[in-house]
Image 1 (spheres, one colour):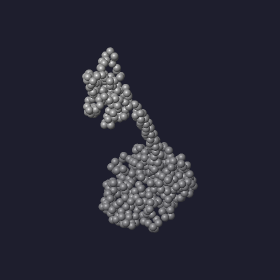
Image 2 (cartoon, rainbow, N blue to C red):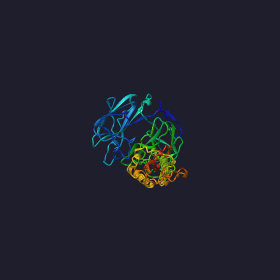
Image 3 (tube, rainbow, N blue to C red):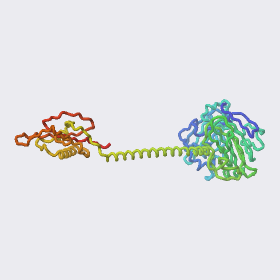
Length: 505
C-alpha cells in the first residue's frame, strides 16, 4: 500500500493500515454514463437542503438510462436520491437490497435524502463491474452523489485517479484505544466532554471530517477546533440540523482543511463544548484524505470555521456561519495580494506622471526657443569690395536690366527695385538690407580714387559719350568666401549684392 495513515485517539495508541474505503465522486471520469445523464447542481439548494452532496456536485437522470463503474474491492454502495425505481447489477447479476425509507419523500415540504443503495455485501476481492439502471422522468429524476467501495490489500492506489481515501474512526477499534471522553457506538465516535481530542496522521494534501447529525441529541450549538502540524487553531461551530422530519443526516462535512504541501501531516481535533447536556456533541464517522483540496461544502448552517481571534470557544454561541475553512484561507491570500497589486499600480502611475511632466517641460522650452529665434535679425553677408561674381542661376540672370533701360539710375533705387522683384518672384523671406552691403564699382564713393590718378575730361561735344554701365545683381546663397574676378576696365559694372536668405530653424 502506498497510502498509509494511522489514527490515535487521545494519544492512547495507533493502528497502521490502509484506507477503509475509496470515495468516487459522481464527476469522476471512470464512471461511464450513458446518454441521459447530466450535471445538475441547481437542485442542491431547492431539493436536498439542508443535506449537501459530498463534493457539491450531482448527476441527474431525467430519462431511462444507466451507468457503469469498474473497481477492485470486496464491497460497494452508491449514494443516490430519488423516488422512482432503479436496479443494480454486479458483474451482470442483479443485486437484491432493501430500499431505505429515507430516500423517499412523504411530503412535498420534505427534501429528498441521499441514501446508500446497491449494497452488495461482502464479495470476493477482485475486479468487479457495477451497473445501475434508473427510470428517471422530468418530474421525478434520479440523482447520483458518489460511489463508495472497500479496496482489497492488493488494490494499487497509484492506479486510482485522484483517489479520495476514507479512514473509519471505529472499524477494527477496541475500547482501549478510546479514552473515557469518547463514546464508540460502532458506526461513529461521539463526545460531549470538553477537552476531548483526537489526533489523526495522514499522507496527502488535505483532510476533511465526516460526521452525523441526529435528532436524538440536543440542538444547541457547540464549538470545536482543529490544528494541522501544530499550527494555529481553526474554530468551527457544531449545530444539529436534524429535526422531527429529518431525524438523521449522514455524510455531513464537519470541516475541511485548506491545501497543504503533499506529504505526511498530523491534525488534532479538540472538542470545547460544555458539560451542559443541551449542547450538540461532536460526532465523527471517518476522516477523508485527498491529494488536493476538495470542493466539500462547509458553508451550510452546520459549521463555521473561523480563527481564534474572531471567536473564543463559547458553547452557547449561535452565530450563523459565513464561510468554510478553505474559503477562509483563500480570502486571506486575496487580502494579502490586493495591497501588492495596488502598490504596483500606484508606482506605475507615479512614473508615468513624472515622464509626462518631463516631456511637457522639454516641449515648452523648445517652443520658447523657436519663438525667440524668429525675432532675431540675421547678420548680413559681407563681401570684399573688389570681389565680383556673376550670377550663376537662372533666377538671378533673369533680373538683369534690359538694354533699353536707363543705365545711369540712382543705385539705391536700382537695389530697391531689384530686391522687390526678386522677393516677389521667388517668395523669399523679408530680410532687412543694410546699406553697408551695397557696392557700386566705378561710381561708389566708398573707394575714392586719388587726385593724382584722376583724368580730367573736358566737357565738350567732341568727346565721345561714355558707355552705359551694366547692372549685375548678386544674391548670396551661402556664407562661403568669394574669390575676386578680373573686371573689364572698359565698362562700368554696377554690382548689387543681396545677402543670403535665412529661414527660421
